[in-house]
Image 1 (spheres, chains in turn cyan, red):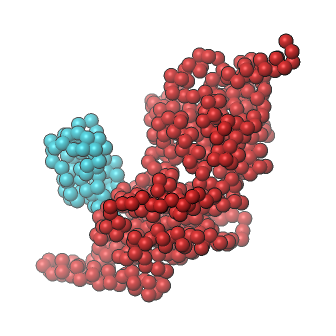
Image 2 (image 1 turned 180 degrees about the vertical axis):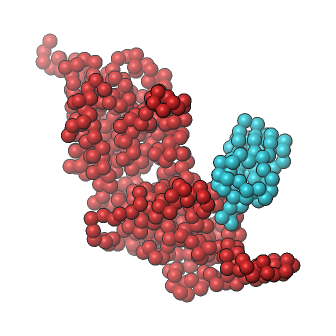
Image 3 (image 1 turned 120 degrees about the horizontal axis):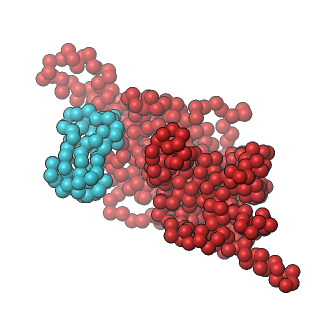
Length: 70
Length: 509
């Protein structure tokens, strides 16, 4: 099991995967918007998206869990 | 037995190091014997070894657990101290410490690099009066390291533990290479932490190689094996002169690799979209010449040594792909040390700028981002080596300053077309200036108004306007950047300036 975490504080701009979807290593899970920049947050390992913990528009802090991948 | 036979027997015995069972233990962990490490490190073995017979009256302590001497790397002589973990776990006794101090003194006299091959459990507590508190006790090793810092390159290869006070050896080196799984650094062991403060933690979590190379930043380079650590160190040293008086040696200039995509095609026009700065670096440096430092730590800023047309340069580049390339306390730290390293050894600096600014918010303010950022500015400002700053896409706010902007005396500040330099980006600026006005406007007019003001703002910070005001010195076609840098660095080589006169600055640390 892998927790995908926010690398910095910002708001969730786009969620690019769906629950249950197969993802590859480095594939973007969400794109945050912070400091007016698009911040892609990718999966560290390949797997299935078990749970998405955020919705578009949510504020996340650095270290918050965004998704769980199995 | 003749005297000569006696000598030969003694040498043969000492050369073997500690008891066979410790050799086996090391082998199981993928650790090489100290003399094997040295054989791999040097071009052709060690040329000089001193105090080989240290503590030879005691059969159980061959060479007192450390090998010290001089050999050649890339044809250049370097000093080395290498712990022997088969001898009392590489712990330090009186003579161990004296040997380390002496090889440091040699490095100081000859002004040649020194390498520390560390694999040691720390002090021999039974010997503490002789090796810990005195004038030539272990403290002297660190005092010497501090004195040597910036005078000659100091490299640490961490093969095993570096515990308690011993952990300051890596801390004072220019670069620390750590072998994953075996190398560790900590002031108090997990066992001690549990006894003294009640924390339960594993060695890997608290002081392992991965942690230090990605979280604490005390380690610089994470490698998989001792062979890889040695190979990295040999490559690393090829970028450096023997000491601060000399310049790095020039290598045979190499062409750049050919790529399908040009630099122009690589950089997204949308300022907010990410791209991989490594792809740009590859297109301006000699093929395979990049030697990255602190790859896993604060990856939003890339630091590394490279060659352009055969000549060493130090590259500091924002990485838009990671955290938007925003500067954080850790990235500021990373830059400060790297810039000091290059400036100390006459390595010109290249800043590749694509920075939205320093991070804002409670978390970073509490972490002291102002003081860390100030450190980044101070080291860059003080550097007197040739400095070129290239505005690749954007330089907002104090990000411009931290990346060797025009006010900090770079030899030139050049921009690629489309680059933006401003206090902040158009979106943020329009929000800041017209916040009240925007609230007053009816909803349907708001979007149009914002767009109009943003366009006005963009025109106002247009790169040719800045070129017209001579804020930047040149606007360059992206795919001519390498040629431009080659010519400029070759001319700026003659630079010879003194930053200022005083004992030393008083900056935040």
